Picture 1: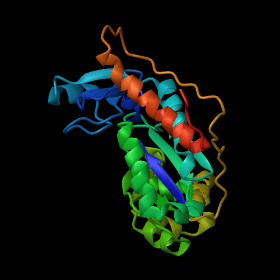
Picture 2: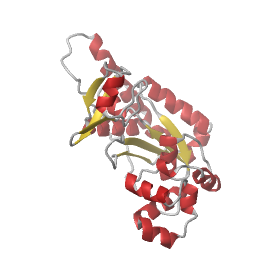
Picture 3: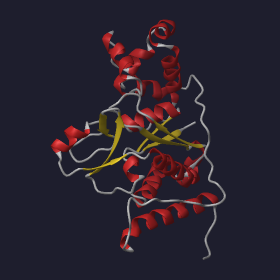
Picture 4: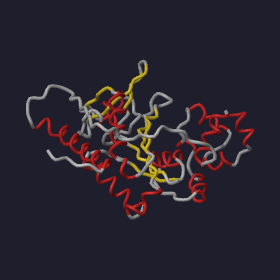
Length: 277
């Protein structure tokens, strides 16, 4: 299998229709409030107070998780024509101060000949997403877990299981989506890369750090199952786009209308259908 993973770092903003680079989305837990999308010179994860001291004209909007899930599902249905199965997930931040990861996977091994190779598939997908004004990072790997790891932290294409072990070996452990306490414990015993984790005795690692983390390492290499629900475009086409406020000009509707019509176009392509009127 060959999984293409798409990571959408600005999906929280895109789901709200925020196109201004200085428009950011925030998450909050208790008294903590931080950015989950970036801005010029400010990375996601920055506390909101610090971000405003750096860039006072930031426009901060609270997160709407339901809008993100709906948009990711729509994207998955629209990209179904490039391969199957297709699955998607928003990985919520384990610790405060981190951004969620909006991930979409397409199994493209059977589609390579149809589209003319992996590079052509990626180029076509990027063109579709550029039309919809989505920022995306792409990576490929024989496992979903590895493709996601690369898409988020170091986009690359790894086509074979043999090349996968070498690619994973150099990945820093801080790239793993694990709690900060687990990563600190690993660093405390001198472990710095995924390759060093994979070289440890399995029984000792499981006793020290838990069987859950061991299973996640196995999933990275393709040694454990990666269950996921496949997404298939529904037969009726139905979309909803909620505006942030009142609209009194036709021009203000152009962004939403363009996005909805492009999504209809992708849905029709996935179903090999057309519109007469």
